[in-house]
Image (cartoon, rainbow, N blue to C red; front, side):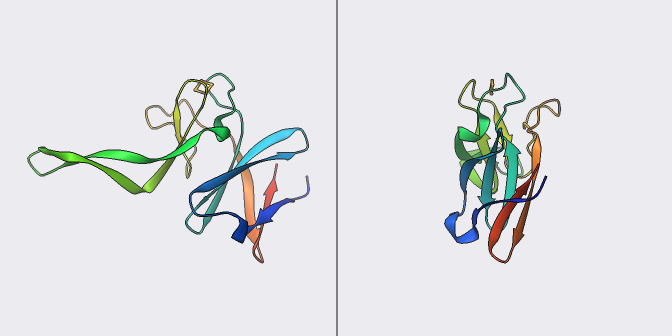
Length: 121
Ligand code: FES
């Protein structure tokens, strides 16, 4: 299939997403910093519209060398999408569920050329 233009880079704010139709497929396109990622909008759990979920930074326990907690902090490097059906989370960069390698989003190819974003299936 030919690459399909889904928008201009400037139309995507950092840490935002857009769900687009390409043919009969729904694809979630995500921006994280200068990187773009694309995933099919079908949750590997039970087929929910995962890309329409909310985006959250990963929350980590802030532990010192003695494993004493100093509260929780946001991880600026990790952004997860939360499926609206049952709440499973997936890493926007890798598509992986953080708790098991058995659950992962199905990727689509995303390309950036001359300030435009294209998706290939
Ligand atoms: S269908 Fe997505 S968490 Fe169940």
